Length: 182
Image 1 (cartoon, rainbow, N blue to C red):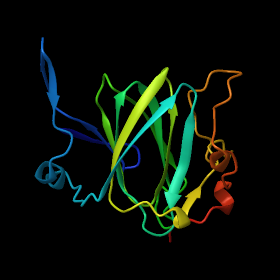
Image 2: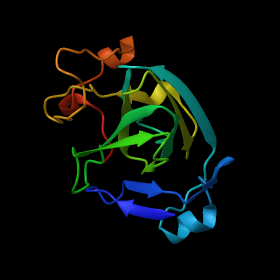
Image 3: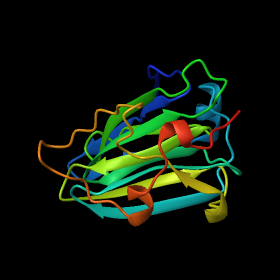
Image 4: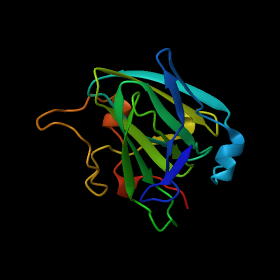
């Protein structure tokens, strides 16, 4: 596997080795020792799988207690995946990274605890899977607005197109008002 730090070094883009031939392919997506050697020593407690349609935007989600680290990837379709550093004492506080994750490129993104996370679907449908380091706790979940002007995330949304949002995501807090990690 190839581990590539992003402009926020704690966010790591991961390119797995793909072994393929005329029959299909094999790819290893998690290997505790390999990840530990790359500095990602985590215990995962929950796996999630979501399916979304074109123009759906989910996020930016995080938990104020039981923060979740996430190892994310796409198994069908394509998304623009975003993580925002919400660790108040971090030198990259308020900065974001966006990566295109596709079934074809098989890239994964390690999003450690302390980041808000979301994605925008670029294909007709996308299936998104991720491993979590802590359990989902809806009472601690918070959401930052996807279109917050302070964050200025460059979502690849076509001119005139509006993303499809849940009520929770449409009513997310502005970054300046969001509960963040100290």
